[in-house]
Length: 206
Image 1 (cartoon, rainbow, N blue to C red):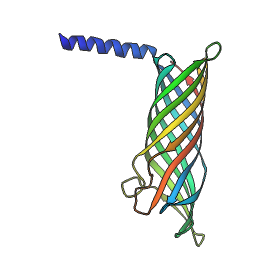
Image 2 (cartoon, rainbow, N blue to C red):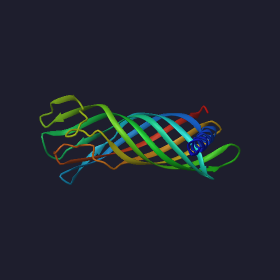
Image 3 (cartoon, rainbow, N blue to C red):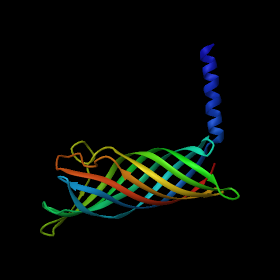
């Protein structure tokens, strides 16, 4: 009897969440760089253009507070200018899958318009990438990035803040991602934490 009651309560909860949940597809532009240290010495870094696409879920939680998880694909990267070593400059492009578990505050503004402020931890998993290296003798090499322990890491954790505006079924968002983990798991003394600015446009189809 207890199991039947638990199943009924779980069914009611899932049904209510599904009934209130809204789903949107977002696409947009990214402008990414990284904070780079070599043996604790800060290196100059540069930006790369990229792309982002996210499936966003919006679930009312408590008043203005909403639970807003997402699944995404991102093309990001960075440039690095090294003070020493055999390589003086690199350009990277990295493809990620990501999962976020965000919370947003939704403030109504006029008829069916909503101003949105969001914060989210983001868990990202790189799966492909390329690195163009310029050596001290000005020769150039192009290599595929290897994501494994002892190379570039298999996992990236960061936090993201967003400011958005929803007009009926359209949503416009500006975001800033700050990486918290070191992308380089080798023993070269490098510490690379990515930073990503994004601008996205989305449509709520549910």
